[in-house]
Image (cartoon, rainbow over all chains, first blue to last red; front, side, top):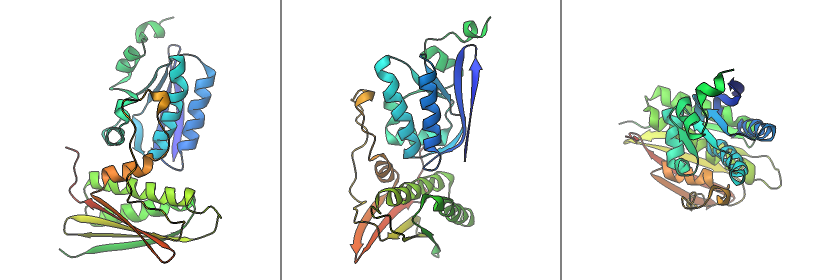
Length: 121
Length: 144
Protein backbone atom coordinates (compact mmCIF):
# COMPACT_ATOMS: atom_id res chain seq x y z
CA UNK A 1 0.00 0.00 0.00
CA UNK A 2 1.39 3.38 -1.00
CA UNK A 3 -0.09 6.84 -1.10
CA UNK A 4 1.67 9.83 -2.62
CA UNK A 5 1.03 13.47 -1.97
CA UNK A 6 2.88 16.47 -3.28
CA UNK A 7 3.40 19.54 -1.16
CA UNK A 8 4.70 22.94 -2.17
CA UNK A 9 7.38 24.69 -0.18
CA UNK A 10 7.37 28.07 -1.86
CA UNK A 11 7.63 27.10 -5.51
CA UNK A 12 9.46 23.84 -4.84
CA UNK A 13 7.47 20.65 -5.14
CA UNK A 14 8.16 18.00 -2.51
CA UNK A 15 7.02 14.46 -3.19
CA UNK A 16 5.75 12.67 -0.09
CA UNK A 17 5.19 8.91 -0.45
CA UNK A 18 3.69 7.02 2.50
CA UNK A 19 3.77 3.24 2.92
CA UNK A 20 5.82 0.50 1.29
CA UNK A 21 7.95 0.94 -1.82
CA UNK A 22 7.82 -2.67 -2.88
CA UNK A 23 7.12 -4.93 -5.84
CA UNK A 24 3.45 -4.02 -5.84
CA UNK A 25 3.81 -0.24 -5.48
CA UNK A 26 7.09 0.68 -7.19
CA UNK A 27 5.48 1.24 -10.60
CA UNK A 28 3.01 3.71 -9.11
CA UNK A 29 5.85 5.59 -7.44
CA UNK A 30 7.94 5.56 -10.61
CA UNK A 31 5.05 6.86 -12.71
CA UNK A 32 4.49 9.67 -10.22
CA UNK A 33 8.16 10.60 -10.25
CA UNK A 34 8.20 10.53 -14.05
CA UNK A 35 5.27 12.93 -14.20
CA UNK A 36 7.11 15.26 -11.82
CA UNK A 37 10.22 15.04 -14.01
CA UNK A 38 8.20 16.06 -17.05
CA UNK A 39 6.29 18.81 -15.23
CA UNK A 40 9.28 20.96 -14.33
CA UNK A 41 12.95 21.58 -14.72
CA UNK A 42 14.07 22.09 -11.14
CA UNK A 43 15.33 19.66 -8.51
CA UNK A 44 13.19 16.79 -7.31
CA UNK A 45 12.95 16.39 -3.55
CA UNK A 46 11.40 13.31 -1.95
CA UNK A 47 10.34 13.30 1.70
CA UNK A 48 10.94 9.67 2.68
CA UNK A 49 9.73 9.98 6.27
CA UNK A 50 6.51 8.10 5.50
CA UNK A 51 8.22 5.16 3.79
CA UNK A 52 8.85 2.27 6.17
CA UNK A 53 9.95 -0.42 3.73
CA UNK A 54 11.78 -0.43 0.43
CA UNK A 55 12.78 -3.31 -1.86
CA UNK A 56 14.91 -3.50 -4.98
CA UNK A 57 11.85 -2.55 -7.04
CA UNK A 58 11.54 0.69 -5.11
CA UNK A 59 15.27 1.28 -5.51
CA UNK A 60 14.98 0.68 -9.25
CA UNK A 61 12.31 3.38 -9.50
CA UNK A 62 14.61 5.80 -7.72
CA UNK A 63 17.57 4.87 -9.92
CA UNK A 64 15.58 5.14 -13.16
CA UNK A 65 14.48 8.67 -12.29
CA UNK A 66 17.93 9.70 -11.01
CA UNK A 67 19.42 8.49 -14.32
CA UNK A 68 16.91 10.60 -16.26
CA UNK A 69 17.69 13.76 -14.31
CA UNK A 70 21.46 13.47 -14.15
CA UNK A 71 22.28 14.43 -17.77
CA UNK A 72 20.40 17.69 -17.28
CA UNK A 73 22.13 18.54 -14.02
CA UNK A 74 18.85 18.35 -12.12
CA UNK A 75 19.24 17.31 -8.49
CA UNK A 76 17.32 14.35 -7.09
CA UNK A 77 17.42 14.26 -3.32
CA UNK A 78 15.81 11.94 -0.79
CA UNK A 79 15.46 13.25 2.75
CA UNK A 80 14.21 12.26 6.23
CA UNK A 81 14.75 8.60 5.44
CA UNK A 82 13.90 6.32 8.35
CA UNK A 83 16.62 4.04 9.79
CA UNK A 84 15.31 0.77 8.33
CA UNK A 85 15.08 2.24 4.82
CA UNK A 86 18.50 3.79 5.32
CA UNK A 87 19.83 0.28 6.06
CA UNK A 88 18.59 -0.92 2.67
CA UNK A 89 20.08 2.10 0.91
CA UNK A 90 23.39 1.39 2.64
CA UNK A 91 23.43 -2.37 2.05
CA UNK A 92 22.48 -1.91 -1.60
CA UNK A 93 25.24 0.64 -2.19
CA UNK A 94 22.70 3.35 -3.01
CA UNK A 95 24.07 5.81 -0.48
CA UNK A 96 27.05 6.19 -2.80
CA UNK A 97 25.01 6.85 -5.91
CA UNK A 98 21.90 8.75 -4.74
CA UNK A 99 21.90 11.92 -2.65
CA UNK A 100 20.28 11.51 0.76
CA UNK A 101 19.82 14.46 3.10
CA UNK A 102 19.08 14.27 6.78
CA UNK A 103 16.09 16.60 6.66
CA UNK A 104 14.25 19.09 4.48
CA UNK A 105 16.53 22.00 5.32
CA UNK A 106 19.60 19.98 4.37
CA UNK A 107 17.88 18.85 1.16
CA UNK A 108 17.19 22.46 0.20
CA UNK A 109 20.81 23.35 0.90
CA UNK A 110 22.06 20.46 -1.23
CA UNK A 111 19.71 21.47 -4.04
CA UNK A 112 21.01 25.03 -3.91
CA UNK A 113 17.62 26.33 -2.85
CA UNK A 114 16.84 28.88 -0.19
CA UNK A 115 13.90 27.58 1.80
CA UNK A 116 13.13 30.97 3.33
CA UNK A 117 13.43 32.87 0.08
CA UNK A 118 11.34 30.34 -1.83
CA UNK A 119 8.61 30.55 0.83
CA UNK A 120 8.47 34.35 0.77
CA UNK A 121 6.13 36.16 -1.60
CA UNK B 1 15.98 -24.93 21.57
CA UNK B 2 12.99 -26.44 19.77
CA UNK B 3 12.54 -25.81 16.10
CA UNK B 4 9.83 -23.35 15.18
CA UNK B 5 8.32 -23.95 11.79
CA UNK B 6 5.64 -22.61 9.49
CA UNK B 7 4.84 -23.08 5.83
CA UNK B 8 2.97 -20.98 3.30
CA UNK B 9 2.02 -22.12 -0.20
CA UNK B 10 0.85 -19.54 -2.72
CA UNK B 11 0.21 -19.21 -6.43
CA UNK B 12 2.82 -17.75 -8.78
CA UNK B 13 1.32 -14.28 -9.08
CA UNK B 14 2.41 -11.04 -7.45
CA UNK B 15 -1.05 -10.68 -5.93
CA UNK B 16 -0.06 -13.50 -3.54
CA UNK B 17 2.71 -11.40 -2.01
CA UNK B 18 0.59 -10.21 0.94
CA UNK B 19 0.16 -13.87 1.98
CA UNK B 20 3.94 -14.22 2.13
CA UNK B 21 4.15 -11.05 4.24
CA UNK B 22 1.41 -12.35 6.52
CA UNK B 23 3.11 -15.70 7.10
CA UNK B 24 6.46 -14.04 7.83
CA UNK B 25 4.97 -11.41 10.14
CA UNK B 26 3.01 -14.08 12.01
CA UNK B 27 6.13 -16.21 12.43
CA UNK B 28 8.21 -13.27 13.64
CA UNK B 29 5.53 -12.22 16.09
CA UNK B 30 5.10 -15.75 17.48
CA UNK B 31 8.79 -16.34 18.02
CA UNK B 32 9.91 -12.84 19.02
CA UNK B 33 12.21 -12.42 16.04
CA UNK B 34 14.27 -9.20 16.42
CA UNK B 35 13.17 -6.32 14.22
CA UNK B 36 16.30 -6.14 12.08
CA UNK B 37 16.06 -9.85 11.31
CA UNK B 38 12.32 -9.52 10.63
CA UNK B 39 12.97 -6.80 8.08
CA UNK B 40 15.75 -8.81 6.48
CA UNK B 41 13.66 -11.94 5.98
CA UNK B 42 10.73 -9.91 4.64
CA UNK B 43 13.00 -8.30 2.08
CA UNK B 44 14.77 -11.54 1.14
CA UNK B 45 11.47 -13.39 0.72
CA UNK B 46 9.91 -10.65 -1.36
CA UNK B 47 12.94 -10.38 -3.63
CA UNK B 48 13.12 -14.13 -4.29
CA UNK B 49 9.36 -14.52 -4.68
CA UNK B 50 9.05 -11.56 -7.03
CA UNK B 51 12.02 -12.61 -9.15
CA UNK B 52 10.58 -16.10 -9.49
CA UNK B 53 7.12 -14.85 -10.46
CA UNK B 54 8.36 -12.18 -12.89
CA UNK B 55 11.10 -14.10 -14.67
CA UNK B 56 10.56 -17.79 -13.92
CA UNK B 57 7.52 -18.56 -16.04
CA UNK B 58 8.08 -17.46 -19.65
CA UNK B 59 5.21 -19.73 -20.70
CA UNK B 60 2.98 -18.03 -18.11
CA UNK B 61 2.04 -21.41 -16.61
CA UNK B 62 0.57 -21.66 -13.15
CA UNK B 63 2.54 -23.07 -10.25
CA UNK B 64 2.58 -23.30 -6.49
CA UNK B 65 5.41 -21.64 -4.64
CA UNK B 66 6.14 -22.96 -1.17
CA UNK B 67 8.05 -21.14 1.54
CA UNK B 68 9.14 -22.99 4.68
CA UNK B 69 10.23 -20.76 7.54
CA UNK B 70 12.05 -22.29 10.48
CA UNK B 71 14.05 -21.14 13.44
CA UNK B 72 16.65 -23.24 15.22
CA UNK B 73 19.96 -22.66 16.94
CA UNK B 74 20.00 -18.93 16.39
CA UNK B 75 19.30 -19.07 12.68
CA UNK B 76 16.25 -18.56 10.52
CA UNK B 77 16.02 -20.77 7.48
CA UNK B 78 13.88 -19.86 4.47
CA UNK B 79 13.32 -22.64 1.95
CA UNK B 80 11.67 -21.73 -1.36
CA UNK B 81 10.34 -24.43 -3.70
CA UNK B 82 8.92 -23.81 -7.14
CA UNK B 83 8.82 -25.27 -10.64
CA UNK B 84 9.99 -22.19 -12.48
CA UNK B 85 12.73 -22.32 -15.10
CA UNK B 86 16.07 -23.39 -13.65
CA UNK B 87 17.79 -20.54 -11.88
CA UNK B 88 20.80 -20.48 -9.57
CA UNK B 89 20.00 -18.02 -6.80
CA UNK B 90 23.26 -18.94 -5.05
CA UNK B 91 25.30 -17.13 -7.66
CA UNK B 92 25.86 -13.64 -6.28
CA UNK B 93 25.50 -10.81 -8.80
CA UNK B 94 27.66 -7.72 -8.67
CA UNK B 95 26.28 -4.75 -6.79
CA UNK B 96 26.14 -1.22 -8.10
CA UNK B 97 29.53 0.02 -9.25
CA UNK B 98 30.30 2.85 -6.87
CA UNK B 99 32.71 4.46 -9.32
CA UNK B 100 30.28 4.79 -12.21
CA UNK B 101 28.42 7.96 -13.01
CA UNK B 102 24.76 7.52 -12.15
CA UNK B 103 23.81 7.41 -15.84
CA UNK B 104 25.90 4.25 -16.22
CA UNK B 105 24.42 2.18 -13.40
CA UNK B 106 22.73 -1.04 -14.41
CA UNK B 107 19.16 -1.56 -13.23
CA UNK B 108 19.03 -5.38 -13.13
CA UNK B 109 20.32 -7.84 -10.55
CA UNK B 110 19.74 -5.58 -7.59
CA UNK B 111 17.23 -7.83 -5.82
CA UNK B 112 19.47 -10.88 -5.75
CA UNK B 113 22.40 -8.69 -4.73
CA UNK B 114 20.36 -7.49 -1.73
CA UNK B 115 19.47 -11.07 -0.82
CA UNK B 116 23.14 -12.02 -0.72
CA UNK B 117 24.03 -8.91 1.28
CA UNK B 118 21.42 -9.67 3.95
CA UNK B 119 21.79 -13.44 4.16
CA UNK B 120 24.40 -15.49 5.94
CA UNK B 121 24.19 -18.20 3.29
CA UNK B 122 22.28 -18.79 0.04
CA UNK B 123 22.12 -22.30 -1.42
CA UNK B 124 20.31 -23.39 -4.54
CA UNK B 125 19.73 -26.77 -6.16
CA UNK B 126 17.61 -28.34 -8.85
CA UNK B 127 15.69 -31.46 -7.85
CA UNK B 128 13.81 -32.91 -10.79
CA UNK B 129 11.79 -29.98 -12.10
CA UNK B 130 11.95 -28.07 -8.83
CA UNK B 131 14.17 -25.17 -7.83
CA UNK B 132 14.98 -25.33 -4.13
CA UNK B 133 16.62 -22.27 -2.62
CA UNK B 134 17.63 -22.19 1.03
CA UNK B 135 18.54 -18.90 2.66
CA UNK B 136 20.00 -18.74 6.15
CA UNK B 137 19.86 -15.58 8.25
CA UNK B 138 21.37 -15.07 11.69
CA UNK B 139 18.65 -14.47 14.26
CA UNK B 140 20.65 -11.77 15.98
CA UNK B 141 21.92 -10.07 12.88
CA UNK B 142 22.20 -6.46 13.79
CA UNK B 143 23.25 -3.42 11.86
CA UNK B 144 25.00 -1.84 14.81
